[in-house]
Structures are given as structure tokens and as C-alpha cells.
Length: 105
Image (cartoon, rainbow, N blue to C red; front, side, top):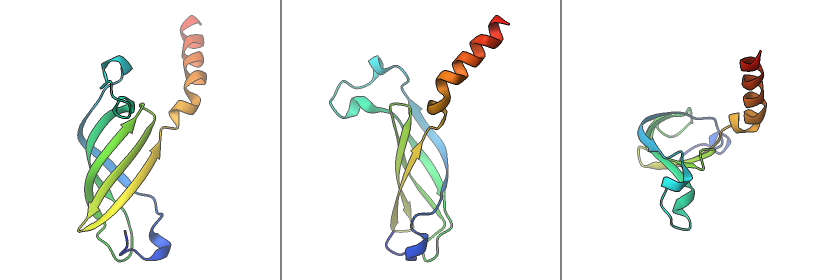
């Protein structure tokens, strides 16, 4: 995003995955060195508030091992890159144990 003001290049974006797919089971993914880690691909609408570039864009979001996402989007000729982390994975074990405890209660 070369057109954005320097202090707005690392801002939060909101994206909506409009259509895509996700392969949860690792055995069902492509068995190629890099591609086996890609668990999903989506077409996304992206909104960001940056000075000097369009606020609305579209792009592709790639999901890595159902935990991380990176995307490439276009804002009227400017290109943006985004990274995302699934914070639920950090608490997954606590969540699973809590649900099991509630079920056994």
C-alpha cells in the first residue's frame, strides 16, 4: 500500500469471507510440500480506514492449518497484505476441558 500515509499502513482491517472452502482433515489436503498446510481459501471483502487509498477492497484469504490466515487484497490498484491468528487455538485445551467437565456434571 504505497499510496497510504506512512502512519496508516499498519491499521486494523475488517474482512468478510464471502465464499470459500476449508479442509479440516489433514489427510484430505493436497499432498505437496507447501500446499499440504493450506487448509482453506476464501474470497473476501475487506474494509480499512486509510488515508490516500480506497477504503473498500477485495482479495483472497488463505487459511494455514486452520489456525493462521494471510490475505492479499486490492484497493483500487493498491495492494494490501493482512495476517490473522485464531486466538481460540490458544485456549482450545481449556475450552475442551471445561466442556467435558460440564457434560460430566
